[in-house]
Length: 185
Image 1 (spheres, rainbow, N blue to C red):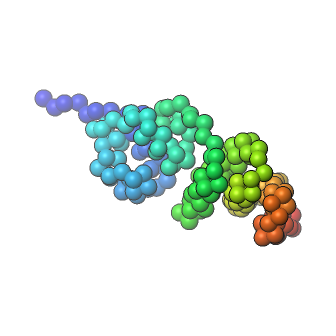
Image 2 (cartoon, rainbow, N blue to C red; image 1 turned 180 degrees about the horizontal axis):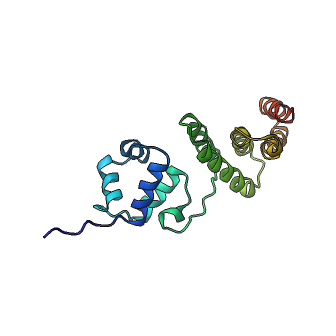
């Protein structure tokens, strides 16, 4: 008598759907998640259950998805240091190389939204990291934007301009003004 085939966990099924939607092989997604391909295969086909909350949070962060999509409650994370902000901005830029523009946009918009609310100091290093986040947000949201939707990327560049003036960074100010001009043109 044959044993019934195990059902994949909610998260295992999500990973399979995510992989298919992004046209990734199991090997590619496994490499991105820093897990063995056989582990991913096990999650997807139900041979292994993916129910470790810490692992689910790690996967959600890597894929830049809401934790709820993997069946766990969200963890409110707001970057606290310039290095943390720069790491997230770097991740957004790297997603453009793949090209995964929608994920990059979601990541950088979430970063700007959360960091802008929480940064209440005029620490130059922190503000410079936030300026880099606004630069990335302006550029990424501007990709493929239609003329009538230009207000959002322009807003990010305006915020970049304000921060550049506060920290007296002429390079960032030039970037902000140049991109604002390009957007308005």
